[in-house]
Length: 356
Image (cartoon, rainbow, N blue to C red; front, side, top):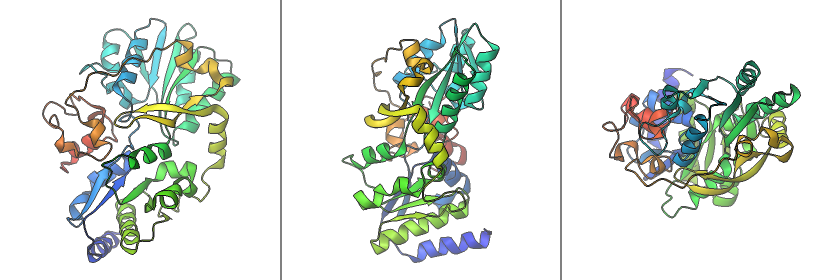
């Protein structure tokens, strides 16, 4: 779309003359796109955008990171991870996979789960543990890596699954006493896998307006307009703005691969706590590739609370600037919490584009 289209959308949003309303995006890519395009600055004052639990690195709790850091120091282990995970601190400020690598741990950045399988083949005398982080978008790729390892009989490869699913998190979010959101911008990437039907529970069970959005500024503005129209008319439903990529049923092949490899399990989320059936664990027939079982990982107790407000930021209760560490003690160069580390984190977006 042209800039003229964007201007028309902004005028249309203002013309709705809405009462105070809060909209939440639950996709880290949306969070960054909104900040980069300066979308908050062109909206009416009474329309507020909040960032939700849409950054997979950000929702991984500190105690899980601590367990990973411990495993990284085992001499026979190579940790393979996406880049953002290398800098996420555990419960101790500054303690990360990047620091552990400086202390002698073998930590490798990979661009895909299958790269980690290749790394295992190249290092037959070491155990390669891939950190499977993400939502439904990345789960099929992680499943494909497990299937590849099994087919090629790569026994020194395993996955530490931190994969999570969006629906249980949204249900947990809406169950919070102080939840005050009137509509959701639904994640386009996740929707390519689970389809429009994956978000039908929002209007059907909660009366919550929902729009599946693309990632260009015009996509997001149009999605905001559609959400505000739903709210104004009192007709909640799922609308698919991202029709060029998202179908009603989603990617059934990817869904089948996920169902073959994973089973739902209770999982721990930063800011939301334990959520039933919100994680994806490897099913029994792939237990040989389950890193937590292979290494007998013991889950560490929750660390003492700190001044970091990542948990509140990713549940929409605080904005980044409301954290006392934001921009002073916590910066992208020296992050305290994952929201400042991740390329999809709300604090990183606010710091980079000065949207606070």
